[in-house]
Amino acid sequence: MRLKHCLVILSSIVILSACKKSVPAERDILGSITITSPSSLGIYLNGTNLRIQGEASDLNLLTSVRVEVRNKSTNAILFQASSNTGNVDNFAFLWNWTISGVTAPITATVKVFAVDKLSNEITKEIDISLSV
Image (cartoon, rainbow, N blue to C red; front, side, top):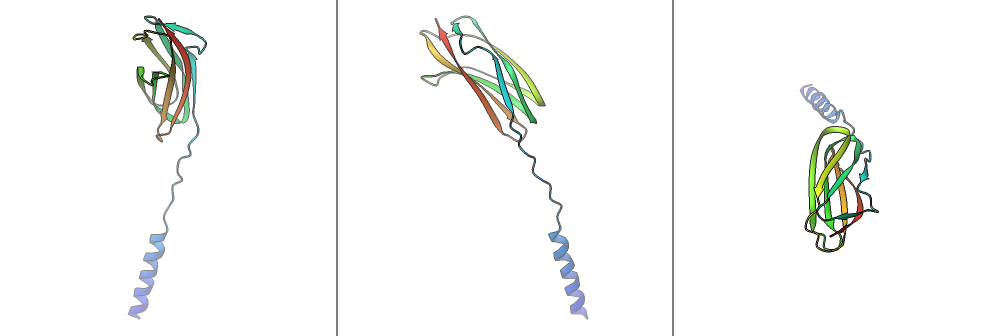
């Protein structure tokens, strides 16, 4: 009889420990980035202001947005900036850079990065021309 009780208790423990409520993983929904300025057709001169503007959106809630401007041929960083977004699904960004260090015409890449609360990153880039 005692063995029977032990088996019932042991069976109950095994069954109860196998019963766990599973929480489904949060689904990643691809976000988007729109760059409205600068224009990839423009030529931007050393010493003038380059306005980097647009919008990032992600239904998984954005945590940060950043930009890098790099020399396309050397990959050297010419400008970078970032903003914490505060867990929003839509974020309008605006950074201004007074173009400096350009001694000859170059192609530069403006690349915007957005990171959501699941640590997923999306990017959007355009090439622009910088000149003296």
